[in-house]
Image (cartoon, rainbow, N blue to C red):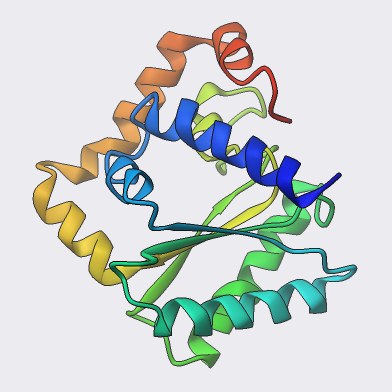
Length: 182
């Protein structure tokens, strides 16, 4: 599968699910200003994906936030098993620390089989973090702080998202994202 196809599926998920269902009320502003960087890793192994992460952490830390505010680092083939991906997140978080970027950049994780601890695999709440491919979302903490200040009761977003997806239901979710791999 080509890079363009991976980015197109990720954009569709971002537009229809994340922005369209307002799962992240902060996403639309940076997306419409073209401040979201989409990077597809072609690494053949986890070390290569970590090297891509290292480059993206450095890139985002140096980039002008008015030009690039956030990065989606996507890998279409590595870590198809969510538990393996979840374990990998410890290495990703360690990379943030190794780059001296704790408190500057944080990583949110998305995966086609994402599952919160203590939930059933088909629990609609898990779909809040389901993307077409394993994805590391690199976020500037300063941008998050500004967005949270502007959004009253930001701590309620998580519960509101679960309620939105439960009301939507699995068939409607699948219809919404017909083209993407979920």
